[in-house]
Length: 380
Image: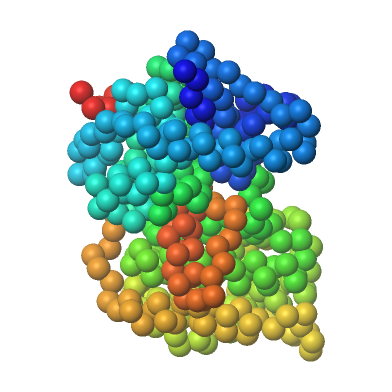
């Protein structure tokens, strides 16, 4: 008897076949592919649509049936301790990796790990590994997953890791990600001293103000979540934006407004025992703060006060709940993580808090990892 099921494949699987019943696991061109086919026991049979109309009409039903059949498959899992953290392994079943698509199952294992969000790896067919997304092991999981993907025991699937919240994949990342694939105009990073760097791709001042506003909100929310901060935030401008007096004035003006804001400085004092220090670099060269002031243009394109105002509006309700910081966490190296789709909710603060959970991975880490160590993380 043939059973319709989802099958995870590498990102380039049949990429030129537009009429096959398949989709990306996550809405990004480097995500693995979910193909839908019938398991006859000895082989998989993949059916294609007759045309785009046929694909559009039949795909929802095929997907629904396949996921229902996947849900009916029972898989075993075990939890292993590694370096003070817990890793949950699902293996021993041909469809272990595909269980990342089973919402109820993912909620169940999140409860097993006593966490709200999971970081999940599916490096090759027949294995799924998951950890608490806030676990210390989150620094090593991307490296472990990449090692397994490059040395697969079954058909390889993906070297990426996935953030699963409420049973659904909401973000994707990895040890090393290609540049310029994110829809966002900035990338946030954290160094060993727990200071933040924000690489901006803005091409003009209007974009710059918007990107500073958005990225600064995320950084402040991440600082509040982590309760650790080195006290410095550096905005790194690229050659894409012209360096002139207008740009330099804008950057200095933004710094001036932020430094005068008592709320933001209070947060920094509580978490870093120092005031927030800002820098603007253009192509690696410091342009703000400048030693010699340049007369500010009388009519700026966008008032930097808007940056401060919007940030305070979103972080103040969260900051009230975050008083003295807990013991400072050990500093971590850096790796990238991003979510390609913004969440929207009528409750601004709720949205900010939820987005902070996702964006914490965006500033993630990248750490040297002994390849010989990865075997000890697999269950005996």
